[in-house]
Amino acid sequence: MFNISEKAALEINRLLTEEEDTDSFLRIKVVPGGCSGFEYEMGFDDSLDDSDQIFENLNVKVVIDKFSFDHLNGGTLNFSDGINGTGFGVENPNAKATCGCGTSFTV
Image (cartoon, rainbow, N blue to C red; front, side, top):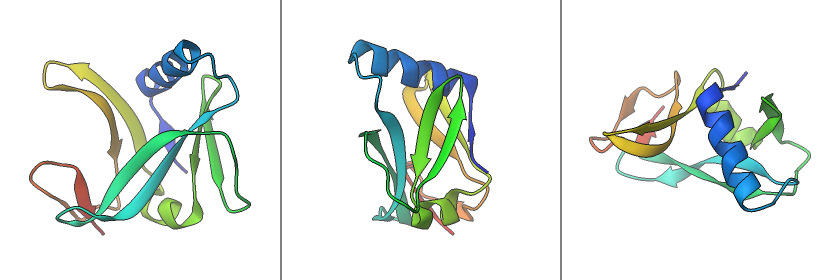
């Protein structure tokens, strides 16, 4: 299971509407890197692989490949637009530690 907060779904929808791209979805990947071992990559995509997991909220799709899902299972995609910064973030219950800047994690 992977959750998409209402605020994240609304922001994804806003960005896709702005781009006039109704066929795309947000893809989240876990890739090696950062000072803690893994980091998140997010971007819009329009092609699916056989092993992709698809999650939806408010008619917005988030797609996660099998390797990444093994590290994100049970997590939540959030969106923040407060004074501490704007952007998407993953609340990941599988992360045992994160780096000081919060962009990478260890499992």
